[in-house]
Image (spheres, rainbow, N blue to C red):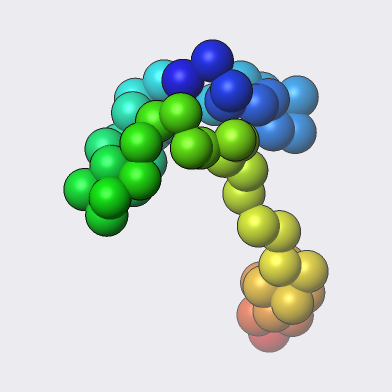
Length: 55
């Protein structure tokens, strides 16, 4: 879990990383195969939230 990276200036929660590593291990991957964990930013979701907020 040393490869967990900081996202948006905040460190990833160790509990969240542990759950992700556990799920990937259950799928057959080892912890050594995981290079990093990062969120996928979807700008469409952000825009939809802004549009819905203005209604």
